Amino acid sequence: MRIKRVAAVAAVAALALGLTACGGDDGGEGTGADSKSFAAGTTMEKLNKAQKIKVGTKIDQPGFGQKGLSGKPEGFDVEIAKMIVEKLGIPEDKIEWVETPSKVREDVIVNGTVDLVAATYTINDKRKERIAFAGPYYEAGQNIMVKKDDTTITGPDSFKDGTKKVCSATGSTPIEEIKKYVKDVATQVVPFDTYDKCRDALKSGQVDALTTDNVILLGYIAKDEASFKMAGDNFTKEPYGIGVKKEDTDFRNFINDVLEQSFSDGSWKKAWDETAGKFGATLGEAPNLNRY
Ligand code: GLU
Image (cartoon, rainbow, N blue to C red; front, side, top):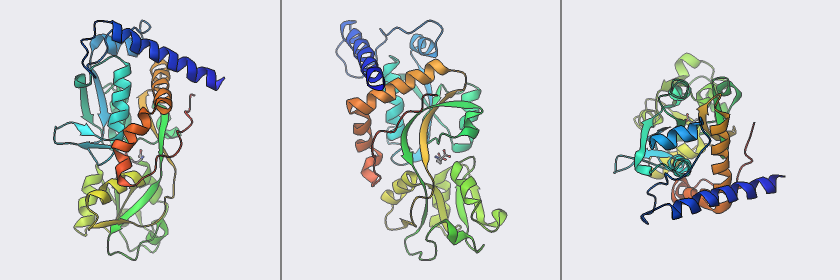
């Protein structure tokens, strides 16, 4: 059943690409493919007709979504989003990238500020009350980053004595998780809207640790190995999904098809190797998509 479905998806995708190649393509790579056709009334048709799309992502997380010298974000999330956009038949330069810090992600999906969010976005039931997720396309895990010379923090239990301050992003799963370990939330848990602010606060000694997903921390460590290190093992599972409107099952299914194809045709691994894979995290096997 599953194998048949994969084959069917691959065949449909191959057909779409074939049509593009015959459809007056001027030969330019990555110029988009407006000759695709989608069922009337779907988000895919609407976006393809409009020939533009708004994508929410992070811009301060090396390896996943970080603003590059071009002014555009770069990273694994960005590459995954580009794959989806390409299959919608929209040229890459018609993507409007919108910075979506952790706490605004559900809001910008619900109110239509963006068409999808690819932003180290953990799939969970609470978030599914307001939005829907395609994926997962990666599984991260929460960890802790400390100053290179710190020997006092070795894991989340190190916050139990009430003396250490830990920073994380408002609206994230790690900030909620770490509250279970600290003695006093008000004095020990320091919230910022973005993780780069936490990193700066750690570097300047205003806080003792930064907690979020291992892959985000590995990006910061890779950029500043003299200052930071990881303080232990992952202590949660953070499966990353693409956020879309809750009721938009067709669009969610379409994105799952794109992800499934990328798992099997090598583009998912290639995207990883060129981005976050450079910073020491492992990709592992392609996750099982949760097609609910
Ligand atoms: N994956 C976690 C979350 O979705 C942490 C990373 C982030 O805040 O983007 O909350």
